[in-house]
Length: 74
Image (tube, rainbow, N blue to C red):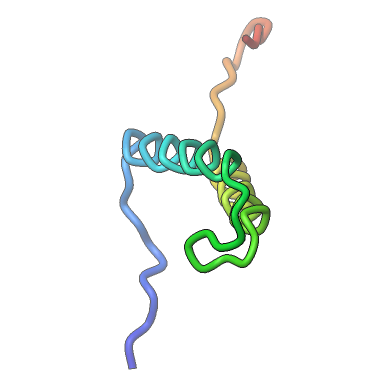
């Protein structure tokens, strides 16, 4: 019996492309109001799934902070 691959080798550019595609999908879905979107009964359900996935990707990022000096975000 086969198992799922739990280790992925994606570059930063790959992750950026995935995130950009998800944001575009989210923008496309938010403009729709008909009843069936790619197997989901409601566009809101598809939007929620995309938002949850974007959140999981965001939570896995490691953000850079300098070791010394004041951190100025922006």
